[in-house]
Image (tube, rainbow, N blue to C red):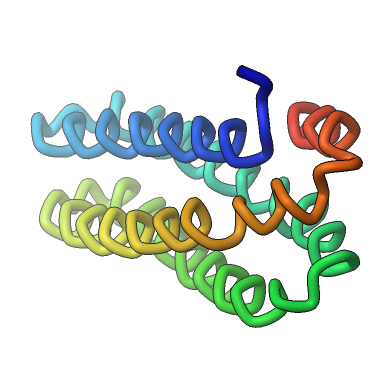
Length: 145
Protein backbone atom coordinates (compact mmCIF):
# COMPACT_ATOMS: atom_id res chain seq x y z
CA UNK A 1 0.00 0.00 0.00
CA UNK A 2 1.26 3.47 -0.84
CA UNK A 3 1.75 5.89 2.01
CA UNK A 4 -0.74 8.76 2.16
CA UNK A 5 -1.04 11.90 4.22
CA UNK A 6 -3.65 10.06 6.30
CA UNK A 7 -1.43 7.09 7.04
CA UNK A 8 1.63 9.20 7.81
CA UNK A 9 -0.14 11.68 10.07
CA UNK A 10 -2.22 8.99 11.79
CA UNK A 11 0.97 7.11 12.67
CA UNK A 12 2.34 10.35 14.10
CA UNK A 13 -0.81 10.55 16.26
CA UNK A 14 -0.17 7.02 17.52
CA UNK A 15 3.44 7.93 18.32
CA UNK A 16 2.25 10.88 20.42
CA UNK A 17 -0.36 8.64 22.10
CA UNK A 18 2.39 6.21 23.15
CA UNK A 19 4.45 9.07 24.58
CA UNK A 20 1.43 10.36 26.51
CA UNK A 21 0.85 6.90 27.98
CA UNK A 22 4.52 6.58 28.99
CA UNK A 23 4.40 9.97 30.66
CA UNK A 24 1.21 9.11 32.52
CA UNK A 25 2.69 5.83 33.79
CA UNK A 26 5.81 7.60 35.05
CA UNK A 27 3.67 10.12 36.96
CA UNK A 28 1.49 7.35 38.40
CA UNK A 29 4.65 5.60 39.68
CA UNK A 30 5.98 8.86 41.10
CA UNK A 31 9.11 8.55 38.96
CA UNK A 32 9.72 12.27 38.52
CA UNK A 33 12.99 11.85 36.65
CA UNK A 34 11.28 9.64 34.07
CA UNK A 35 8.21 11.90 34.05
CA UNK A 36 10.37 14.92 33.30
CA UNK A 37 12.03 13.21 30.36
CA UNK A 38 8.79 11.67 29.10
CA UNK A 39 6.96 14.96 29.48
CA UNK A 40 9.58 16.81 27.46
CA UNK A 41 9.56 14.11 24.78
CA UNK A 42 5.75 14.33 24.60
CA UNK A 43 5.80 18.12 24.37
CA UNK A 44 8.42 18.06 21.61
CA UNK A 45 6.52 15.42 19.62
CA UNK A 46 3.18 17.23 19.88
CA UNK A 47 4.67 20.61 19.01
CA UNK A 48 6.43 19.05 16.00
CA UNK A 49 3.15 17.47 14.92
CA UNK A 50 1.32 20.79 15.23
CA UNK A 51 4.06 22.51 13.22
CA UNK A 52 3.82 19.89 10.46
CA UNK A 53 0.15 20.64 10.16
CA UNK A 54 0.14 24.40 10.64
CA UNK A 55 3.28 25.20 8.62
CA UNK A 56 3.12 22.59 5.87
CA UNK A 57 -0.10 20.65 5.50
CA UNK A 58 -2.84 23.14 6.33
CA UNK A 59 -1.63 25.97 4.04
CA UNK A 60 -1.35 23.59 1.09
CA UNK A 61 -4.73 22.05 1.83
CA UNK A 62 -6.41 25.45 2.12
CA UNK A 63 -4.95 26.45 -1.24
CA UNK A 64 -6.83 23.62 -3.02
CA UNK A 65 -9.84 22.88 -0.80
CA UNK A 66 -12.19 25.66 0.32
CA UNK A 67 -14.18 23.24 2.52
CA UNK A 68 -11.12 22.80 4.75
CA UNK A 69 -11.27 26.35 6.16
CA UNK A 70 -13.64 25.66 9.04
CA UNK A 71 -12.01 22.41 10.16
CA UNK A 72 -8.51 23.92 9.90
CA UNK A 73 -9.58 26.83 12.11
CA UNK A 74 -10.98 24.43 14.71
CA UNK A 75 -7.83 22.28 14.66
CA UNK A 76 -5.60 25.33 15.04
CA UNK A 77 -7.67 26.54 18.01
CA UNK A 78 -7.38 23.10 19.61
CA UNK A 79 -3.61 23.16 19.04
CA UNK A 80 -3.49 26.41 21.05
CA UNK A 81 -5.48 24.77 23.86
CA UNK A 82 -3.12 21.79 23.93
CA UNK A 83 -0.06 24.07 23.97
CA UNK A 84 -1.44 25.69 27.14
CA UNK A 85 -1.99 22.25 28.69
CA UNK A 86 1.57 21.21 27.79
CA UNK A 87 2.96 24.33 29.47
CA UNK A 88 0.80 23.70 32.53
CA UNK A 89 2.05 20.10 32.59
CA UNK A 90 5.63 21.31 32.52
CA UNK A 91 4.98 23.46 35.59
CA UNK A 92 3.20 20.61 37.39
CA UNK A 93 6.14 18.29 36.68
CA UNK A 94 8.54 20.89 38.06
CA UNK A 95 6.44 21.10 41.21
CA UNK A 96 6.18 17.30 41.37
CA UNK A 97 2.44 17.72 41.74
CA UNK A 98 1.07 14.26 40.97
CA UNK A 99 -2.60 15.23 41.18
CA UNK A 100 -2.16 18.24 38.91
CA UNK A 101 -0.16 16.19 36.40
CA UNK A 102 -2.73 13.41 36.30
CA UNK A 103 -5.60 15.88 35.92
CA UNK A 104 -3.83 17.70 33.10
CA UNK A 105 -2.93 14.41 31.41
CA UNK A 106 -6.56 13.34 31.55
CA UNK A 107 -7.67 16.62 30.00
CA UNK A 108 -4.95 16.49 27.35
CA UNK A 109 -5.77 12.87 26.54
CA UNK A 110 -9.48 13.63 26.13
CA UNK A 111 -8.92 16.72 23.98
CA UNK A 112 -6.25 14.97 21.92
CA UNK A 113 -8.42 11.92 21.20
CA UNK A 114 -11.33 14.07 20.00
CA UNK A 115 -8.95 16.24 18.00
CA UNK A 116 -7.27 13.25 16.34
CA UNK A 117 -10.61 11.70 15.42
CA UNK A 118 -11.63 14.88 13.61
CA UNK A 119 -8.34 15.12 11.76
CA UNK A 120 -8.33 11.46 10.80
CA UNK A 121 -12.01 11.47 9.82
CA UNK A 122 -12.25 14.82 8.04
CA UNK A 123 -9.04 16.71 7.34
CA UNK A 124 -6.64 13.98 6.35
CA UNK A 125 -9.06 12.40 3.85
CA UNK A 126 -9.63 15.87 2.36
CA UNK A 127 -5.87 16.28 2.11
CA UNK A 128 -5.43 12.86 0.49
CA UNK A 129 -8.01 13.77 -2.12
CA UNK A 130 -7.20 17.43 -2.71
CA UNK A 131 -3.43 17.05 -2.64
CA UNK A 132 -3.16 13.72 -4.47
CA UNK A 133 -1.12 15.22 -7.31
CA UNK A 134 1.45 16.59 -4.83
CA UNK A 135 1.39 13.64 -2.42
CA UNK A 136 5.06 12.65 -2.78
CA UNK A 137 6.36 16.17 -2.22
CA UNK A 138 4.06 16.84 0.71
CA UNK A 139 5.01 13.57 2.40
CA UNK A 140 8.65 14.50 1.96
CA UNK A 141 7.98 17.87 3.64
CA UNK A 142 6.06 16.21 6.48
CA UNK A 143 8.84 13.68 7.08
CA UNK A 144 11.43 16.48 7.18
CA UNK A 145 9.84 18.23 10.07
